[in-house]
Length: 307
Image (cartoon, rainbow, N blue to C red; front, side, top):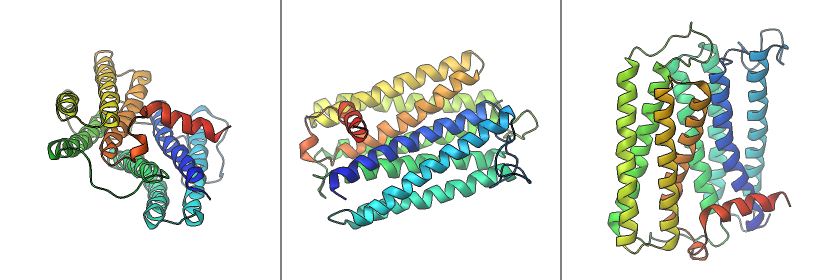
């Protein structure tokens, strides 16, 4: 297993980990969360789903998740046969396995506890940790990566860490808002969090606006500090992601939370979180990447896998 092939595998794994977040949201937004009321079987008498709308949606999501799990397993095994073997890549790869097993357990408990908001929140937040792990793995798996100190001023380093912390708060408050809102995942009988929806929505919006302000500050800071071109590019992609997410968030609020727009909001949250982590990782990116455009480089690697 060459470093280049291994890196391509990690890129695909990171993309798939992001996509299953969106597919899982589709299950909830179609009220199919209890389409398969049992776990790990779909029903108490059948492993596969009966031919009903909600059951098929939930079952297909389980199948897709299982396929992604198999691919994550391939990455973990590949980390052991990569030449040269690196312990950090092995740990990161097998951490994905541990996180994926944890996801299966939390997802099963979510079903067994009839989509209790606490379990659903934990399920989403654990997905975000998996995305973080996957992105760090992609970053470190680059053939030219080597340990080194960040080559940005200390102020930028601190601001990047603050961005990650605030983005984490935004994600958490987003799950609280979801757990309070109308999209329970399976009809109206699911118990919601005992908060006023308008208040938690406002709190979530305020945290998102704080994150937006910090990102704007980052756009100025990377230019004033003469940061590497790669860091500037990644800060711009983060700015685009947060502007799109804020627009989607206010749209879903004023349209009274239509499921289609909420699905876009979940996808935007995943993209925003990924862009925040990716910017932070840019501080220690290999020198060969300094002048490359971030998105074309990643898309090109995904494309090369299928050539």
